[in-house]
Length: 295
Image 1 (cartoon, rainbow, N blue to C red):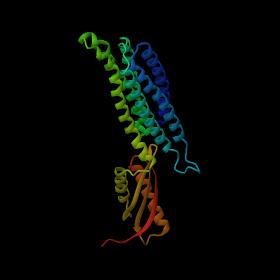
Image 2 (image 1 turned 90 degrees about the vertical axis):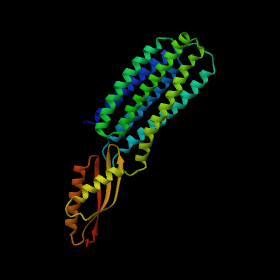
Image 3 (image 1 turned 180 degrees about the vertical axis):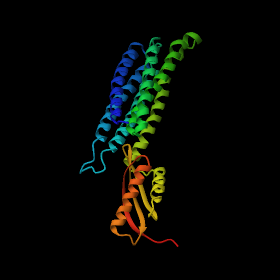
Image 4 (image 1 turned 90 degrees about the horizontal axis):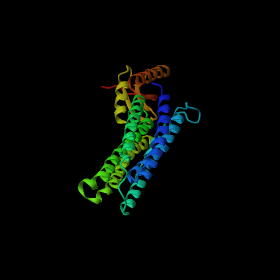
């Protein structure tokens, strides 16, 4: 699949997120809904997140050069981490606004704000499914981050829909005036969901930036390398992720009597076999060592 589709999805997400954020902000102010205003703030953070993701994807697509021999793939992880941090800050802003509004007496939101929220949820869920499908097909962390900030926006809108519904209809149906606070409670619940999403995006990105090993991938690489005839032992195998691919470093033990030319050819066969059989491996760096014959 063409990775340019990730960029197109990010651009589409940016345009739609900005439009929805502005629409929710206006509707929230006119309709007196704290949850909807908070949802608009989160959507604006999503919009900035889309800009970060788009920038990361564009940088990650650059080919390797003399100064960056491993390429620019980690720009995707930086973008994902940036979106995670931004979502976390959005959650803090929502909590602050919600608590403030709960301390000030106010009327229930307008009923038509529910229509706005229903439309927002539908559009955001479509964007989530479209973006995630492409990101999974290409193994892009930044693409997944872009998809999940659409889903988080949809979740906050669902929470706002429930809260606004209770705030609008609850006092009249039950006689309990304090139910107008459901609007703010919904915003607080949504902030917790946003924090969870931010954590899920930021931790994998941070692991990639710190060159954390991928044990599962390492086992698959080891098995593939040891299946090549002439390899006696695979030692010191390390993997690290960069963008949608992984770089592998390994030491191969081979028969000590092999010539340099023969050992080099064997390393080339191992490299080709690993890249063709283990998905996601972008490059393999091999160091040859003389092995000891097993008794």
